[in-house]
Length: 476
Figure (cartoon, rainbow, N blue to C red):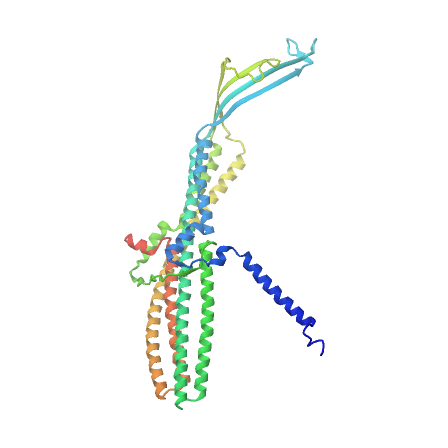
């Protein structure tokens, strides 16, 4: 017997070892799995649109960043008050020091320097506690500082509102897209069953010698092609659900299935164009941010002109000072010393200081204000155009949806007639296949047209800056 066929050959032993390795790896993987993972898989969540929005409200990264930035409003507002309106306070709770001086020269009665007849070290110590209050006011600096901080806070609030609107539109669009892909998948599944029915009809007719084998083969080919279309649609649905999960931003969300939700499809002729434009000019976050930027530039111009105003300086100092020779006042915390009080008032008039730099700063601030004004006007024009264009697109898609629905009705009727004619032998399988493809395509077109309308509605709401239903409820 040759070595290749021997029972204890090297190849047989290697195969046996590979088998044992596979078994060991499988057992090791099973033992390392968490107990909960081996016991059961996470329950499938029925995800509604409202639940998806709630999840995104607490997990969407872009929106959470805007919320975090808004948390600075309270702190910065208090800081503006304490630094610009209220006096700056400096409190020295405890300061003690020991000093030694060796002076070799002195001055005579006429102020001329002379050499001291005796030179020796002089030691003294002191302990201080002090409260110092300082004001510095230049023109309307207090009001400008508060106005600027107020505008910074408003900009953060509007940015948070803009991020919220963008998050809601993105989640809604991803949710509707996933529902669209799910509905298209169901349509493809129904078409697979219809193609199988056509194949059974072709086989029966072939058994009755009323059709050839070619019709049966074409029917089987149609089933295979439709199954391939179904697999492609299933992949599209999985991608849509992944996109929805990303928009929500919750990595720990369990597997979910989408809950059936009625589509907001309606006749848009009831919407008033000018009312929508007026609403957008009131609430659109992008336009409101541009308006805040204009007011901020105006405050910047006022601050530049403030350089010409005199500066009023006020200072009040209350201190307790203990100073004695040698180390007697070191760490002296007794309160038998009288409190020292000092008050200072100063006025600075920088009328001609940095004249050209001040003029340049005023010119730059003026140009910035002009540019921000033009940018706000540009945003206003773009918002008007976007709202009107989105409404026109919505009306066009509504008409397209009506035509698609009518086409589907015609195609379904034509398919029923074609199937009947095929059974009685007055229509070929190729002609039947054309009717089948036409009906399937019109079914897909109706689904896509309905969700295209919803997508256009979301674009309109994004352009306006508020839900269209809410505006309708307000009587706009």
